[in-house]
Length: 110
Length: 120
Image (cartoon, rainbow over all chains, first blue to last red; front, top):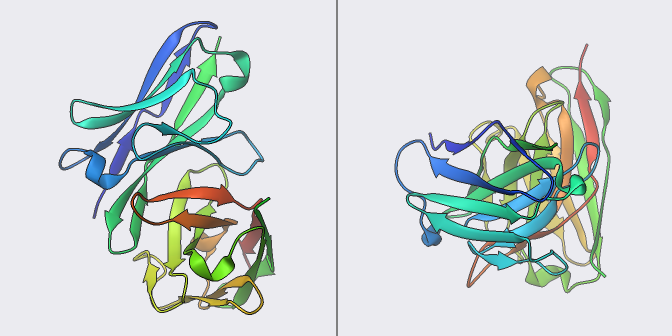
């Protein structure tokens, strides 16, 4: 069973920079998994932030960026704002129509 | 503007059945794969199933394979999820998502979800 790992929680100060990661319990995340990132606030549908590792979805501020750091996918928020306080989920495409989500990271801005 | 509108959720007893629908607009429906993603109360997102644009390819998470059936009617621009033998652990908000396939893969649009509650 494939397990995608994310930090359960993270905090950042307003204006600060934070990097959330997305890993595999067994193995390394590479661009061939097409990592994508989604933001979700309570009671709302997910919003697509980043796809294909590092491409911002339409309308997403450039303070959000994606990358591969070491053996994980990463989402970096530079200059965090209060309304960035949300849950963030990564998903990996495993091929053959199969997707695996990470458990999500709850980001607190304080 | 892409819109995805789920319906069909509700309260059902364990062992029961339910069919969810997702009405789509704003894109060429038959060209795109679609997926169902669920979220149990207080939990994270969980991929359930995907169907190709033509409907010829269907894919399922191990937790629902053999109990859930995904289908689509391209003449009605509607996606379905037939859920049988429902369990308490299937309780969740079910989201419909539009897939983007090739040259990269991701979910580019999401519906607002419909709540399924499995309880006696």
